[in-house]
Amino acid sequence: MAADWAVELHGVTRRYGRGTSAVHALRGIDLTLPPATFTAVMGPSGSGKSTFLQCAAGLDRPTAGKVRLGGTEITGMKENKLTALRRTRLGFVFQAFNLLPSLTVEQNVVLPMRLAGHRPDRRRAAEMLAQVGLADKARRRPGQLSGGQQQRVAIARALVTRPDVVFADEPTGALDTTTAAEILSLLRQAVDTQGATVVMVTHDPSAAAWADRVLFLADGEIVDRLDRAPADRIAARMATLTTPAFAKAAA
Image (tube, rainbow, N blue to C red; front, top):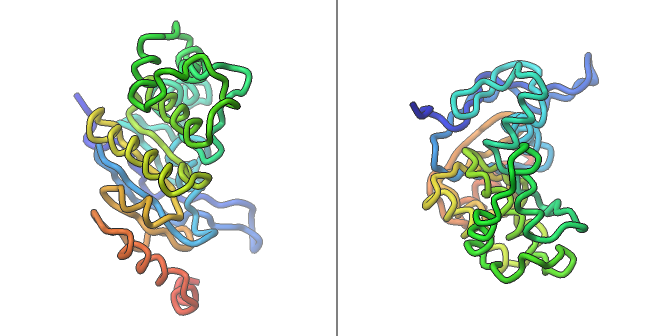
């Protein structure tokens, strides 16, 4: 039976250090995200966006609270099991692409299969490369591609195992506006046609406008959300989070 929620965070806190010098990156996050949805996470610098993504994806362990992915609690999971879960049920897209330069495009795409101990499915890889418009680039090396093309390869790699959730950390941060829109369209298609759940950290209101909902973090807490909002409305809400008055109230 399918889980009701793709991502669940219950009372998640993340603290670095101890005593008076401790940094509270997350302060009791409670959140449920349904399957086949696109969520953007925004907030001022230092608001906890990256820590949120890392805890939700099992890349970092919360100080307190519970995280569930597809109904599976990962908070106390042993590292080897957590690694296996990440390789089979999660996909990752980063600003820096993180492609291996010595491998071909096809080899980069099937890497999650190899890491999970499965035989690479070249037919599936070809299907994913066709979806991202790179069917003729399978034999190329990443260094022979543009930045936008490399990010397309990263998306193909993230989706090749049909993951439940794709976590994207500033996936368009290094791209021009036109190329960024192409990448966001691919993530949107993954949600609408493949039933993936996408959770994306971004600083760009235009990128966030592709999402079903936008969550706003400030000082480690979710302070607001917007559903299906245009870029100008998202930008206006972000502007209020960076005003001195709000910062003082949140302190």
